[in-house]
Amino acid sequence: MVKQTGHRPILITDAPRSQNDQLHSRQVRYIVMMLIRVACLIAGGVLISLDVPLLWIWLSLCGIGMVLVPWLAVLLANDRPPKDEHRFVNRMRHRTREEPAPRTLTAAEQPRIIDAD
Image 1 (cartoon, rainbow, N blue to C red):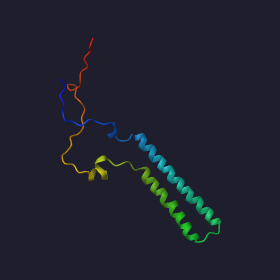
Image 2 (cartoon, rainbow, N blue to C red):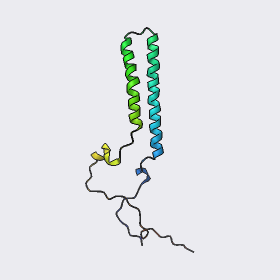
Image 3 (cartoon, rainbow, N blue to C red):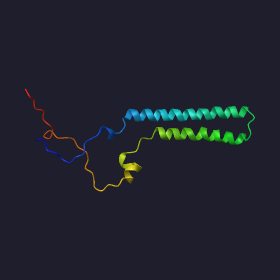
Image 4 (cartoon, helix red, strand yellow):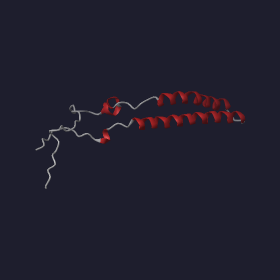
């Protein structure tokens, strides 16, 4: 007979993202931000060659984009997702009782399969 305990089962949806998935998303974010920087550089070059009203405003915006975006890209590429206990959503969740940590069944608690042969 298997003893039923009040433990919470471990769900695969509770598992964190794999390291490869996290790395891939950070690489994609970095490449997109570097493409934005290249777009700012090209836009600045085009704006200089054209007779654009308020050129100094447009060039300063492109300059800020060329300086600020790479800095943010490096910071975000080196950042990892926060741990569950540090996430804002989990801090705001009201817990009435302390939940026990999920656990697996021990060898004695494992269900037995009985052959009908």
